Amino acid sequence: MHQLVDIVSKNGNLLLSIPMKGDGTIDSLEVKFLKGMSEWMKINGEAIYGSRPWKVFGEGPTNVESGMFNENKIKFTYEDIRFTKVDNSIYIFIMGLPQKNHIIVNSLGANSKLSDDINILNISLLGSDEKVNWSQNANGLNIELSDFSNFKYALVLKVESINN
Image 1: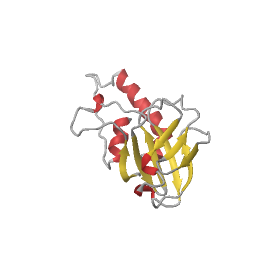
Image 2: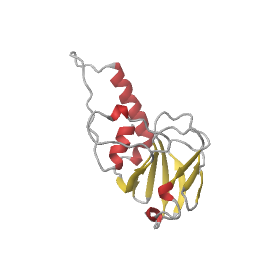
Image 3: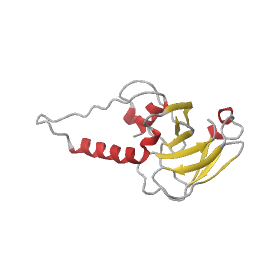
């Protein structure tokens, strides 16, 4: 999922190659991967389908080098964030499962030039009915997540705003 999110946040397309056995069946590991991707997309597809890149693709400490066949070497952390945009919503992808309940998104800080034209109305965690508590200060958008233990891959937050 991380490779998909990273590519889409940069206005790219992901080409999946699913190898088949000689008898035309798919290996059980490939089936497991496709089922996992399908489950994740059922919950988070609105942040991918029809999305556009936001003002920046993301933020965080992990450097993703261009080139082929390096995707399995990348280890994202919860500080690695990617963005997409659909209409008046910005989607925040937390690339690694958080080790704590508090996340800071620097790009959406009150003093960030990236957030000058954004008036945040609501933030929700896709796949969860729980209320997301948040505040915005000069340094960033501070988000409190109460329970994300059921999530296996990237968490996706939907930021609804008047402008963006």
